Length: 283
Image: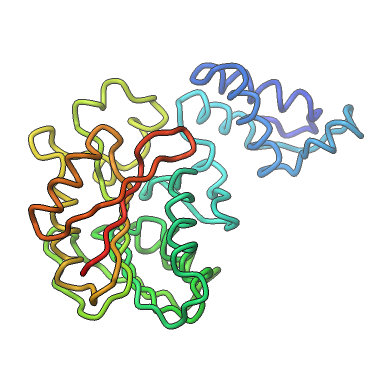
């Protein structure tokens, strides 16, 4: 335990060495610097202007051990920056991804300038999508559902900080009753086939909640079927459904929705040129 003062550069070296057991050198360095800044205020600027600076870091051993175990740095510091928001995260919720920001921006672009929209977010997790939309769509009425009470507790705290009017409710995507008159339904449900588990990075498969990630190989679209059915029964005419999707099942997701009564799904690729989002409009 580091009870005495420790040089900034030594803290970075210790954390980088720990993270390098899990990540490549560049990523390990970025993670070490992020942890040092968040936990002890050691900014990049401070490392330049005061390279021999020191601080107390009594948790340094513990943090290094956690990084070496593959625990995501966001869980260690307890928050993440996403979509211009500082969101609390923990083991009960997925860490919001950059590609999900693209989904939010798509919705914002489509509905900018409209007021009083009724929005439902299915499988909200940390509340990221619901909160971001509540901030961007003025005077909107946003309700967010999740089956996990642990996730909802985190989402509510995020909501209190950033968008107090968002309503968080417990509900199972697979059996949620219709909510009539909605303008927007959005969902980023579990979509990774269970067979992908073996190839995933340990910081994901060993730490992030599997119930929010994985679906059975034999029924990979189970949540999308439920989301589409909910949207068909809940959206008003002209209302829209937006989903983040599994890149390898984009066309199958569009076909499934068309068979259930929601045709003309529009696929959009993310910044990595992977099919990542779909939009449907109810006619």
